[in-house]
Image (cartoon, rainbow, N blue to C red; front, side):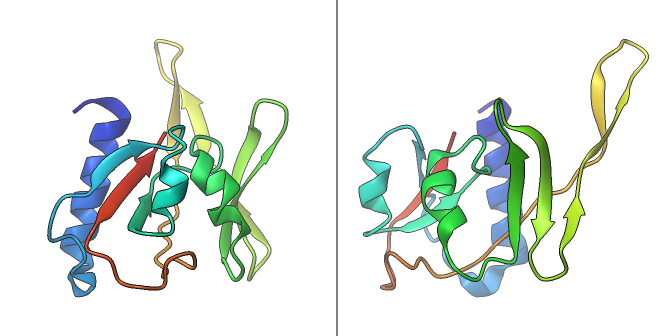
Length: 136
């Protein structure tokens, strides 16, 4: 596994190690692209791990970002998903990554932020034995 998929697998391993009380991942989740429209049906029948903000993940953009009570949201300007930041609805604080240019002229993150939200799937309140990792 390389690139994005490898990053998602590392995050999943971190989650499993640091949140053992959720005991959720007895079997590895099946990975699906958010661009595959079969995943919309999975929202009603499975446990879901969403990877990526609404910028890169269609399910995050079309469903998750519209759930009530979310504390954090990824904000961006259109066109082309510019000026990405994380907005804290409780404090009205905005967190924005900071970048620098290395000696080769490559833009690198100096400070980056991420969100981990754990909630029951409002579209499937029942517990399910199946898990799906939905990513870009």
